[in-house]
Image (cartoon, rainbow, N blue to C red; front, side, top):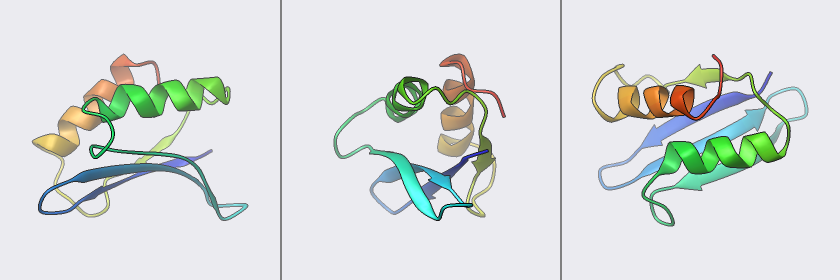
Length: 80
């Protein structure tokens, strides 16, 4: 099952879907290119026929932007 990793810098948010078994990034999204990160990432994952993921908040507390990303990923159809 792919892992959706979240990284939050002081200015930007980055999301990656990572296949830990094969050690590669499946898809990625950042707020540099799109304002709706979660739906963009979910669309890319649906195109690759992936519906279930593991959410990795990267040590950040589960509130604010991180919680919004998780909620939007669920609304876009991903299960975790």
